[in-house]
Image 1 (tube, rainbow, N blue to C red):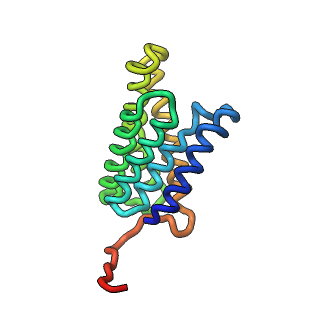
Image 2: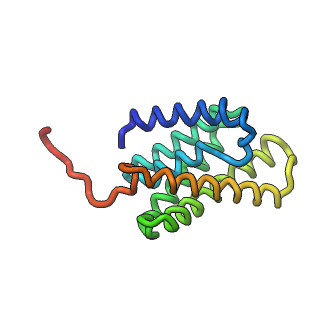
Length: 167
């Protein structure tokens, strides 16, 4: 995985999520940080994907008003879960990518929403609204992540990496 491309993508996502999305009114429907964490977890090697998903959560928490740890924990767990699921589900086809992404994203987004409800914002929305909103965000994020991974060169990697000793 190219860490410089990841850093550039993270910068673009941070600017888009914090500056562009709030102006369009799509903030309640699109979570680009989760999309990036899912794309990285689906396409990068296992250990790189897990670390990168945690870094996305760390930046997500730093870009918001709330605490940093909940976002880093949630997206780190989503990256870990997706790297496990991509080995058991058929992620070569679009439905497999969407299902695997959804199964990883929904618990993460539910954890973030529950954290916001009980520790950050107070009892702002009901528990049913937390479940429905996190499910809606997970569906959107998983479909976007599955679509992004169909770009050439971003599909899931298969096979072993060849390690060179000298050059």
